[in-house]
Length: 467
Ligand SMILES: Cc1ncc(COP(=O)(O)O)c(C=O)c1O
Image 1 (tube, helix red, strand yellow):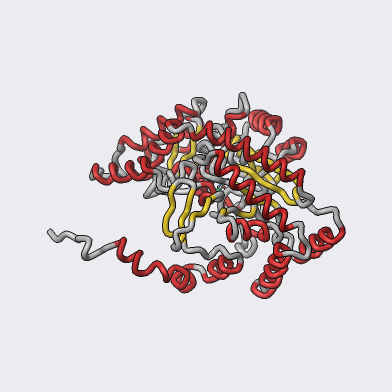
Image 2: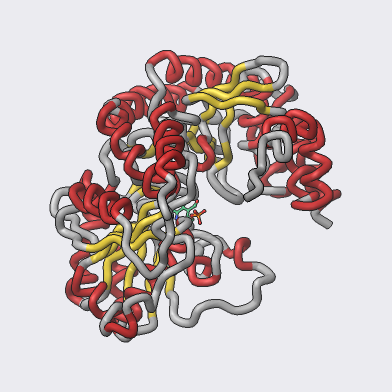
């Protein structure tokens, strides 16, 4: 038997030798426009290490990560217990996927998840968030025999065809021709519009994010409870997408748990269930729905995927839940989230360009607004007439460049900066961020000034390259 040693394949050496080619490789084989965009906004850094809430670049400079991989690092990057779970799993020499055979880890993770959502009975594991959405759509349609699914304006549920059919942002759909028949969108938070949609014909499901990721809009308890009631009345499945809001992000394990008596028929989980290490998602559902899908012995795997219930993924899921509770990260998200929101609210009041701060736990948005004074207002209007999505870039760019804090814009054509730090941050990181944002906002109020020059430069760049 031949063995492959490290001399034959040395991953560390490969990375060390070729990491400087990262942009060239991406440009050549993956996505040249992505590299161009990174360069345009100054995000083309060379990060070489990540730990907890922090990243380090090649020069040894430290960056505070308030983006956390779009919410996949709730427990922080490279958490030692996640790494240990991976190592332990590898040492088990587990047969892993037998396919025609059951192993213990998926059952153990399902047991743990359902312990926290006791009104649901079954877990179905997937490999991504979008795959959870596809699963939920299939389950709901199969259980009800109906086609129509209601979703909300501004919704984001992923980019596969089913999930894309429920995307509240038209630009994601552009060019992809046709979509799932039946979805109907309603304004988020508006129960009257929702009722109208229900009355127009039989509905399989309503899918909502308890806090919308695009723009960071928290759903009110009355909207979520009203939506649930309508689902019950019209016998539709009430699907809550916790892919970003879940795993402690909002100060509860799941955001829907902030609202007493909210008991969704399906809960979708992904992103941070992975411990930031191995992709995994889960759809929690009721037994009654599950039995409609897996209805006979010859249908016992009618919905499945080769890598679903993967051993490494299950190990990371179990370790993540352990860390969240053991380290008090969910409570920490609530405490630090409140501090951060209070600080952001003060900045929104203090600065002319500040409009509003909102969110839940450590999923927060800072919305910029049209200024009052003549020069700023004119510049703002001109810029927004040319491109509605550029100004927040002029805020996140100096946050990274001068303050070494990584953030993101909360969606296309929105003046909202989104904050999704790891749940491991403390008062020091909150203070650091607020101080940095305050300094950047101060600069934005200087016209002419560097922020406006940057925005103008981006506008020219976008005009040139989007032709
Ligand atoms: C609320 C929500 N649902 C679904 C998805 C899709 O998840 P994935 O990117 O793992 O397919 C995302 C991803 O950002 C999300 O935020």
